Image (cartoon, rainbow, N blue to C red; front, side, top):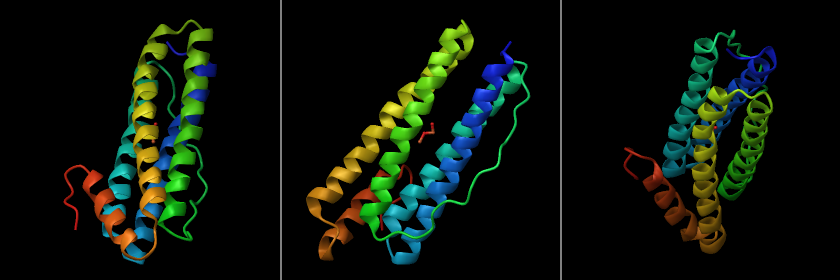
Length: 168
Ligand code: OFO
């Protein structure tokens, strides 16, 4: 059974995961609008993954006797100066989320809630993978450069990272 404190904290994370989903979907729209179909497909797919992260937490709260709640989220940023800025921001966002997950893991540990502690390990591993993935993309953009032909290849490469979505 979750403590009221952990219910509140997990609910904050539910809302953050749904915000992440909105943010990546909005970024996907910007990329599509600017003619980057690979990056758009990748970000749209990532938006769906973030939604699932939120749902997984939501279900856990319900199963552990808490009242799952969806909080208000602000509108995500819709305008970017380029694909470089989009992916720099995804990386910054994931680093911020990792900090939130770490704080949640610590809260579960402090409360001696080993079920929540174990459940949250999935998110710890996921954050490691996500930071690694976004860091690779940012590094690739920095090396290749987002001008001229570089942007064409970057978009193609990012598109290949979208699982089950063929790069165009
Ligand atoms: Fe981007 O990861 Fe959710 O948690």
